[in-house]
Image 1 (cartoon, helix red, strand yellow):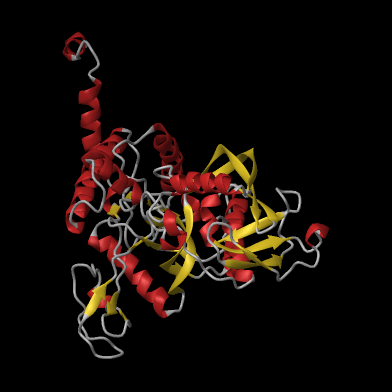
Image 2 (cartoon, rainbow, N blue to C red):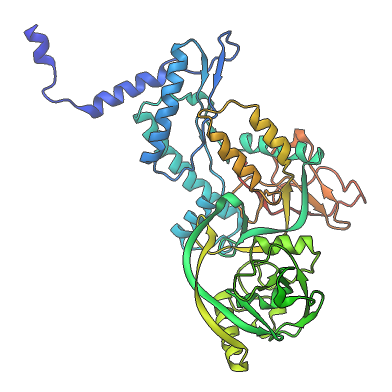
Length: 454
């Protein structure tokens, strides 16, 4: 006994011990068995972004998942506990731009993708090592990486099938747009921050208007008042001249106008916020695009063309003062929508994008058929569905993501799609295997947009 004790190390070398056990656990048979007769328990593990750091919040969440996986194995279930990596998207691109001090437009498209890929592979390696050290009982035989062709080929397959089923379409429609990242973003990617700005009262063709965004004056398409507001009784349909820009717009009545805010008259611009989008659609108003994808003023802004929105705001306010139409200014507390990744205030722009139709009622019916743990989490799903005010924009004007498997005929504009057996494809690299189905042309233009996280 004394001889055995003398052979034990005097200090506990945890690095050696952990490394030995990690190797043992690596070889243990805890993986999902294909064809097993045991009842299956499949965990839809949320794939983290490979930032390189498996932080305390990740570890906290994975502990819960691991507890459940181990419990179900002990209860006799054939458990699949896979690990995925959500590689694609804006976070990786922004990080590459920060590291290399470039933008996505400064280098070749494929070169930029390779930069993103190299960063991602290195980050996955570090995060995988951290997860192994924490001894999560993950089924590493079912690891998946979204940037790999074998994975995004399945994403493209779902795109094709949904397109053929009429669930995906392409259209011009207002979307949330980040002018810094130069891409559309989803509702869930919009964060909100508080700020103090100015509410500017000015003379709008004899009518007092209050706005916090005078830079959108060039995009004004109507002035709205509440139908019961006695101050504007009988003025519906009257034409007003937009100050500084000279085009005429009608006065319309709408019950969504708040008579107690500002002067009770509000200018509708395309687009200042989601309410503008609603009014634009309901009243069939024209579209005036005053801001471009980079956050600068377009040609309809006249002498303000090329200015960013902040500079344009100051210039217009200065001109209002010079012409004597600026009445007064008041401080205004606002919640401003910003890009979740770069914190830049978003714009709502009408752009040609790909959309998935959202069947709100059918989605809610399906959600009610699922058993939720805890039950109140169903409310989160219900709120998310009910708050989607237009269809899901699935296209992004970025680079490092799943390519949209589409070409356009250069002669007639017809959409050219690959066969399912040809997937995966990158239309910016690969060529269509057949001529245009409409006119027979072999000239094509590749789709350069990529898919949102799918």
